[in-house]
Length: 139
Image (cartoon, rainbow, N blue to C red; front, side, top):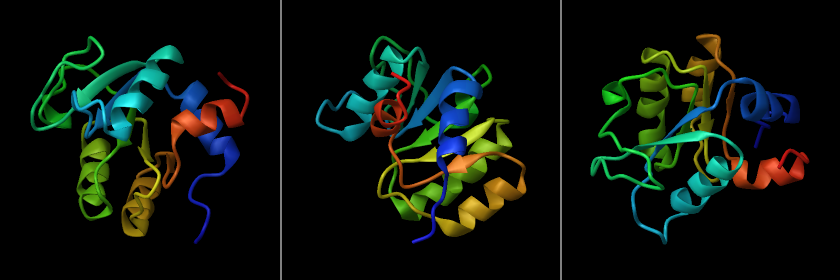
């Protein structure tokens, strides 16, 4: 598979793109990867915004049912949904004015990648910030 997000792009999204991260798929389910990754992002200084149909408060942050419902600007949209749904979320991220899109490990949509990059936004996919932060020596 091609490399969808080199180290420079990963580093830029983590350190230079802003601190408000909408985590799509984040709920109060402690057994899901999104729950643990969101905690890592908080420790790294990010404001985590849960986006999930249940709109639960997670890690002390109010949740929203969709990106469109978030009433303030979002810098990065971190996507924890399956690959079949990821393209629509990526398109919504562009539509709401996000500054970058991040698809989690195992989430791949090459057409969405092309659309987001075509819109001028940095994007990585099939990566996890909880792995990349220590790997790049950022945390």
